Image (cartoon, rainbow, N blue to C red; front, side, top):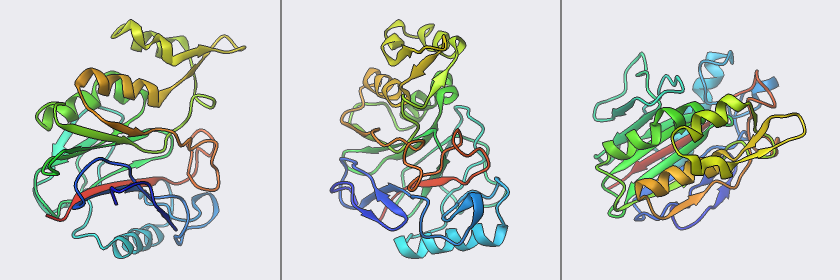
Length: 252
């Protein structure tokens, strides 16, 4: 799944420059059993969808991808905590917004619907990390902490999955100020609009942080969840909708 982005019903494979035994990608919103605002492949258990349908969607995904184990689902809070996946997942899910693993057969997962999923792999495929990065997560350092947990950015590659694009991501001055307080160069990612607010390039902000960390190459970041309504959930477009899942694992 790392040879390029190949699409199948319910799955968008990642462009991650890693060995063939590393697998990564993001689900689309199609191919599941949920209906209404959750139609149809909602993978989130916390958004009000029927538990049986979420379970069926997760089972379908595991079977269709041939997952080696149950994914480590996280209780995401838009923070920067990183956990190490080294045991069989159990309830309740850990409160964190990123996870890393150094073992084959451990499946990492994050849920998104406008925030960015960011997948990391070392060039030899032995170190894997996956982060949920909205603007709050970026400001609080979720990418930096994930990279640190993987031993530093040298030798890491990354893929930025679908997220809200700059045309749809309007923010206030407080968001821009939070980024510029950390690095004034981030001003390039904010364009003023006619309402006196800012259009923010979330993927561009993530790329800038990854570049500062020495992560290279970085692929992806060009698919807007808000604009592509038939393919992706978007919290800004449909606050009561579902979530996609980004998964990352290795088989050797």
